[in-house]
Image 1 (cartoon, rainbow, N blue to C red):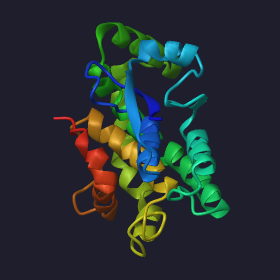
Image 2: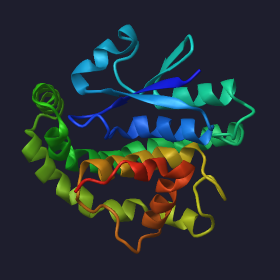
Image 3: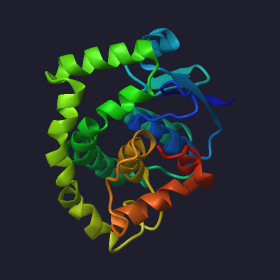
Length: 230
């Protein structure tokens, strides 16, 4: 039975952009599992599977419904152990927990503010209203003010990535010779930026940019199949 992946989109239902949904899409592809994407705009999230979760991704696998990208990855690992591992054992789960926290504090915290207006522009009018009101209420700034305030963080992003560069000097992926869920965690952040914005967050000669290109080509190039923002 084909798994359903509910993933966040804007006006264009063919362009999923949520970093967390991309983690799940890459995890399903890593496991070689067939899935169909179901486009969900912001204002439709509460209706997904009768309100199963407050956010997406959500997957339905037969009678099983799960939310949260990390919990979904753990479920896929346990349910389909005969397929390629997302973690490579308990140590890989612990490692992925670290990368989840690192990506949220060192990458999402930078990219998220910079993308606010780009995301807003991708949305249908009713979702634009929701997005602006919810984000401005959360951060206490207008979207425009938040994007302007994020520039200093964007300027410092390269320095935040130095630990990752040191790892990539020794191996092609964070998971070693091949990708693991840790790679998909960080990939999700940069794919978020790639799909939403034409801005450049990685220098062309950055080893992290090389790693990202390798990730885009994984699993038949599912990451690259969604075009970058123009």
